[in-house]
Length: 467
Image (cartoon, rainbow, N blue to C red):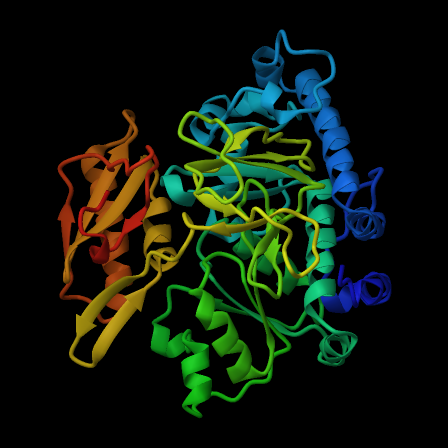
């Protein structure tokens, strides 16, 4: 295995944590961030057997903790063996099931849905500690249904360890010296008007003195953002010299990674993750995403939740987050289709390697007099997701200049009010991008399920049948 630079990463994390913005636990805990970094490197170096052993032990610990402290899991796991070391012994869960039992799901009895919603419904509180010790974030993912996730400091320490393990593979010692010399400066493009994982992280980072973080809103027009950075650099209109370009929400066509790396003379990477498990995977130099299987159990399955063989496309994937104790996520249907590599990855990394199909960017393209305007899902959906009373939503591009908005609305909400607020938010986004001519239609039917039973938030015109 090629693990050049990992020793340097551990040393850098210990000596330069302020420059690299390493998450450090706020409270006393058994496993500290530096210890986790060392364990992550050592476990992977020992190979697949050690990784599987770590996963079994951590799964048994998490299941025991969930049964003892979560009324929901205590009920769900009644009748299971005293010790569980295999995920296939557990029933499947999903966002709808867990959100409906939010208070009983959490292991800290002080955590309630009412208190969490009070925080996430207030944009001025983005990045604020919940109950003085937890991080709270929201997501809709591929289902269009809002989830509220409470994360403990142990989880954030694992995020740091996994990030540094990936950086150890991706960057050379000279790259780290450049980062340190530039005082860890970074720019982040993200949705800034919600309690999303990236926005919460950015808010925390910006509060640190001398953090060197610049945050750009994904809702700003593409021309203003220079979002197509490689095109601008190639055209000579942009002059930056980054060390690392990393995606954390949407992937790129495979050929684009090499092109962008060449344009900027920098490393380009991607990670596949979710608010349910922020440390899920990271990309290797061969273009495969390696699952951090020592901290997450990852199961590609068919529509009946039966395992699919490596090399076969899955219908969905089940994950078990083995770090977050305050809100255990165990055998959770993430809703994404993946393909697991059937043979060892040439990069030498023994962690499972996958490609993701269900999280590719569903970019909408609109024609204007000056050319095409392309909008990623993130720019469109966050304004809709912020409207109270929407339990599920979907945007379908039915003609080159028409969007059909389909909403599922909570029984207690005022239907007309919800529609007006959602339409106003969507029209505002379109206007910001010079797309006032685009027609927004009110869908007469609820969001449609696609093949395999999953919902998609955004359905481009190119998909034809919108299913």
